[in-house]
Amino acid sequence: MAHLLAAITGHGFGHIAQTGPVLAALAERLPGLRLTVVSGAPEAKLRQRLPEGFTLIPRALDFGFVMADPLRIDAPASAAAYRALHADWDARVAAEAAWLAGLPGGAPDLVLSNVAYLPLAAAARAGIPAVAMSSLHWADLFAHTFCDAQDAAWAAPIHAQMAAAYRSARAFVQLTPAMPMADLDNRVVVGPVARLGRRRRDELEHLLPPGPDGHRGPAVLAALGGIPQPAGQIALQRWPRRPGWRWLVHAAWLAALPKGVRAERCDLVAYEPLGWDFTDLLASVDAVVGKPGYGTFAEAGCNGIPMLYVRRPGWMEQDALIPWLAAHGRCREIDETQLRDGDVIADLEALWRQPTPQPPAPEGANQAAELLAGMLTRG
Image (cartoon, rainbow, N blue to C red; front, top):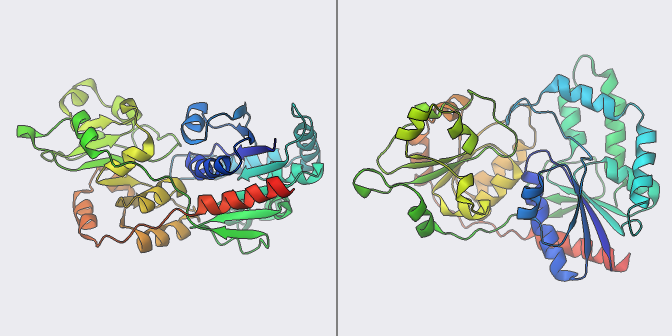
């Protein structure tokens, strides 16, 4: 029985959304596959998105970046974390290689990383085949954030170790859309990876409150992914009321409102207590408001759902995501003040007037699964 170890970063939920469809397609090809998942992400999120039957080792193998909020990198904290991670890099790689080799039942036949580089370096040290997969890698984001700074001397050796780890993989599966990754000669480009949700709008309407006189208007989902939002950055009490409009928002945003405001704003609905699969929910609303992240952008594009987005300062992956969604879906930029205050009515109406293109097919999962299945069966 082939054994795959999948290391999934806990930096937000987009990497889980990328990996889930690939592992599901792989499980269809290799029904007896033994799957071990190593991740610091919440177990509930992993169980929602990944195929059943995997063994979870709750262990973070990377941190990506320390985030100040869903939009901004905390550069000083991230720099300190990277310096600590690389303080004795060779010993850390050796220890990780020994851990891989000493797993119960022996070393895995293949390591798949989305998108930590430490397990790639460790797999190379242990002689275990490895594949990286993502729309980004931390080395390019690290270089963009730190290597051009005035005090960048410390960053160059760390960047070199990161880049060498990514180059050590037998392949880097580059999911469309993706950062350029021009320095990697092991790239294998595949199509978009996204789940297709069921449009359950009639069911959703039964769960959402109607407007005055029973009028039912648009349902808009506001979601910023898995990075916590600091208090005060979303002022739900300022979000506009329109007859029949419903705003589906994070439960934490709603809980931050005074009780009296919550009681009178029945148009504000926490989506988590609905208990829905997130992709089904996304596919059942009229629009999504969020930030550039692969999971939401790919699912909005492939499910044909319009999206308003707020740019992420310094996050270079968005330079690939935004043009892709603009070419294949309907999207429109808003600013942070609009997001905070919900000042998006005019932009939503403009978004809905855009022509509706044919959604792209999420063919990348099958393409990536074919590559992985070949490596697992041929060695």
